[in-house]
Length: 95
Picture 1 (tube, rainbow, N blue to C red):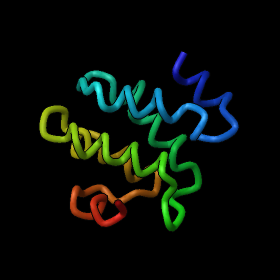
Picture 2 (cartoon, helix red, strand yellow):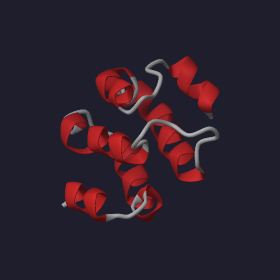
Picture 3 (cartoon, rainbow, N blue to C red):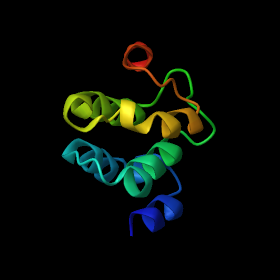
Picture 4 (cartoon, rainbow, N blue to C red):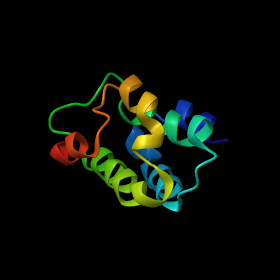
């Protein structure tokens, strides 16, 4: 259902509240089915400068849950695929 919503939304902002809630909820077994596709949809074409409020909220959710879920470290390949930096420090610089 998530992938369909991500594909059907004209803009990430349409699904951002749900996407951010999914990331904020944590969990480590959903990287390839939830968090990865969310990152790719949120940053389709790479990050714009400055990033949008919805993108900022998403990255904050990854940072906030990183200690318990490996939100950043466990998603390095997805961050790279989305054109994002893959370290906490570099992501913090975007925020």
